[in-house]
Image (cartoon, rainbow, N blue to C red):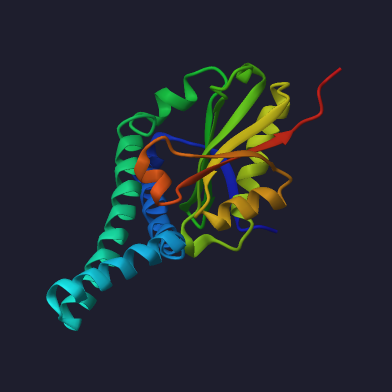
Length: 223
């Protein structure tokens, strides 16, 4: 027996749900930073910085400090990206969850309750892609660290899949980012297939290897 239950969102969940979402997004900063730090272009830039400063100043200390500052700046950039996105969403669909998700046709929002507290969340909306009226998009899946490993994320995925099946849809689709390794590995274990990937349009996204992964879970078409 699981010690949690999936239920519809209610207004008393508002502050906790927003907190879980924001914390979950900002948590990706470290993995995204490590992904960028492993890129050959990053190492080439850091080496160039070190050599250039060494040649100009002749100071090993200043050269090392410059590299440390560059690494710190790289981490700050990643944190800014995720923080800015979280703040945008908190002012957009996450501002009035009841209105955006529970009062619109085809949309829904669920939470997981465990020991009297919210321990996870997920949302579903009609896909904005062409032909999306036959697809459901899985959004806002997040489980706090202390509640992971209990099967909560899988239960939330299945909830969205069941929602799509009951609506007679042909697929569940979603997008995640490459640094969110735990997330896309979970989706693949659940049967989602990666259909494509793309870099964010901004030049910064390409430089930081900020790749978006697109997944799809096909459902049997009702006859």
